[in-house]
Amino acid sequence: MSEDSNETPTGFHRHGSNDYVAYFSNEEREVLINLVGQIIELLSERSDNHIDDPLAAMVGITSHDSPPEDDVLLRLLPNAYADQVDASEFRRYTELTLRTKKSAHAMSMRIALKSSPDGCIEIDHDGANAWLGAMNDIRLALGVRLNVQEKSYEELEILAPDDPMRGVYAVYSWLGWLQESLIQALMDDSL
Amino acid sequence: MVKLDEVVDSKIDEAIEELFNSEKPWITIVWDDPVNLMSFVTYVLMELFSFPREKAHEIMMQIHTQGKAAVSTGSREEMEHDVARLHEYGLWATLQRGDEAI
Image 1 (cartoon, rainbow over the protein chains, first blue to last red):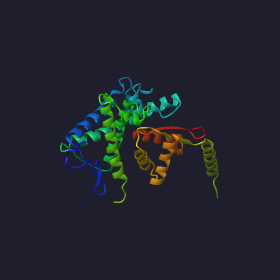
Image 2: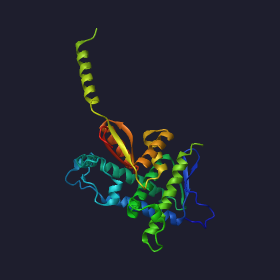
Image 3: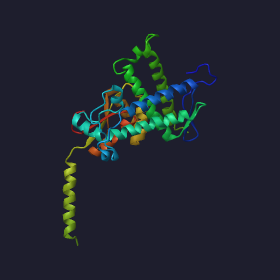
Image 4: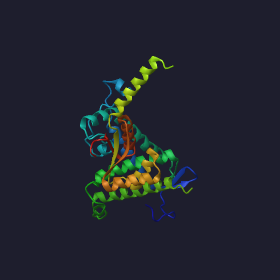
């Protein structure tokens, strides 16, 4: 965050009745483009091999019926049932749609950032929901890398300056703050 | 005068209805997650289920303090739809029969 800037960081705020605006520094914009690109790439890595079954591709059936081995992908594409047989069946018929929707959220965020070289982002309600979904996916991914399931936030706050996770945690916290600002703007019904 | 085929139809309808109602409804559960912001969980519940803010907040607090909460009940198909929508927004959701211990 640019504390030297004349504008205090405010994150998102409501603009008019249905739009949400935020200003990002060059550095912040680059970080967001990079992170959202990683999510798009990660989701596309789990591509389907439909060479054998074009009909399955047409009706959106995925060739995957077992959960992803990668912990981040597993958190983004979780099991819907405790029972493994039911979970596999559900995954087979729905995972492709879920991946497509998550990619669409991330793409929407990336396009908005790429098409705003001045760092001024203006989004409507649907755009805001896409940003929330994409920002949350980035935070879920970073959260797995930071091991927030096991570690407390107190532990993460006092990471050593040379710990590579320190920078990751800084970005994770900043994204949480940014996401919160958008949620508050969306829930602000005083307008 | 009621026609015979209408009587038969209505009896079949009753039988089918009974068959489906005898099955316990399914439930969608959202589990606590250390990453998802409390305000985000509240917002997603308001968006997806059209809950008033107070109800969404109450369910969010139940998830936060008790580790999980049932957010919807209905047929298996309906609950699969709800789980898919919750997964789209990164909430950790599963579905199960309503009579199973959660």
